Image 1 (spheres, one colour):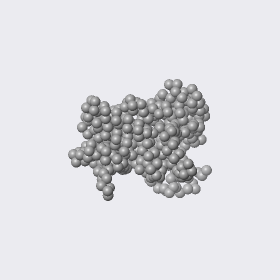
Image 2 (tube, helix red, strand yellow):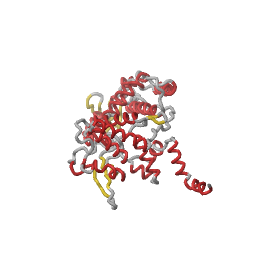
Image 3 (spheres, one colour):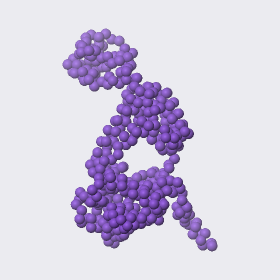
Image 4 (cartoon, helix red, strand yellow):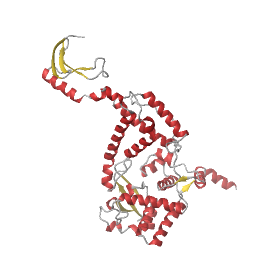
Length: 415
C-alpha cells in the first residue's frame, strides 16, 4: 500500500487524506468489526482532487452511511422484532395505497397489513418469534415443520390448512425474511417448502338459484314494505346483469359514473365508469340488454333526478357506505340460505359466485376467454383457474354439448 502524504481529520474517526501514488482525495472512517477486517470504511473520492471538495463529499458520505446496518447489536435481533418492523411498513404502504379509493368511494377500506399482523401473531410468532433473525438454517427448519403441522395436525384452532392459505403464510414469512436481508441480518431468504396450490374455486350459481334469491328478496319487501329490500332487489339484479366486482367498488357508485346509452336499435343499457379498481386506475363496463328492459322503470328516473355526486344505489340511506355494504352481503347470504341455495357440493357460495356464472355465460355465448377477461377486468389465467371448474351435472352436460356439438348432431341423424 502506498504511503499517506497528508491527512486532515474532520471529527471523530472521519478523515480525508492523499496517497503517494494518487492525485485524488480519499476518505476513511470507522464503522464496525462486522464491516471489514479493521472496521474501516475506505474509498477514493475520484475525480475529486480539491481538499475543500473532498472534505464536503466525505462529510456527505459519513452523514448518509447506514451505520445501523453494521451494528453488532443489530445482529442480535429476533425474528419477531424484524417481523413487527416489516408488517408495520406494510400497514403504512396499504394505507397510502387505499387512500385514493377511500376518497373516491367515501368509505373506509380494509387494510391488508392489519390482517397480516393478526395472521402473524396467531400462527407464526409462537413458533418463529424468538428465533435469532440471523440464523437462516434454524428459521428454514422451523418453517418446514410448520408447513407439515398445518397440513397434518392443523393450525392453532386445529383446522387443516389448504395450500392457498399456507401460501399466504409463507408469503408473509418471505416478506419478513426480505426485511432481514435489507437489515443485513440474512444473506438471502429461506426457501418455501413445496405446497399444493391447486385452485379451490367456489361453484357458480345457476340462474334458477339467483331467481330464488331475488324472488325471496322481493317477497320480503312486499311483506314488510321496507324500501331497503326493494332497493336491494334492484341492486341484486344490477349485479347479476353487470360485470362488476361486488362490494365497495359497486356500492359507492355515484350518478356521474352511470350513463344511459342506446344502441342503433334503441336498446337501452348503462355504461358504468369505475374509478380506481382492484387492477387498474380506470375501467368501465356495461349492463346486459335485459337489465334496462326488465328494471328500467326502477332506475330510469335516477338519471334525471340525482345530482352528479349523489350515490346511485341506496341514495337516501343514512347509513355509511361500509354499513350498507356489510348489510347487503349479510342479507344475500341469509336469503340464499333461506331458499336453500347457498351451499353446493358442500361449498358456500357468497356474492362472488354471481360473477362466476356471468363469466361462464359469456364464454358459452362464443366469446373468447381473452375478450371476456378484458370485459370483466381480470386475466385469462384467472378465468381458467378460478371460474371454469363447475362439476354439477347441468354444467357438465352444457360443456359436453358445446364441445361435442358436431358429433352429437351426427348421432342425432343416425337415430
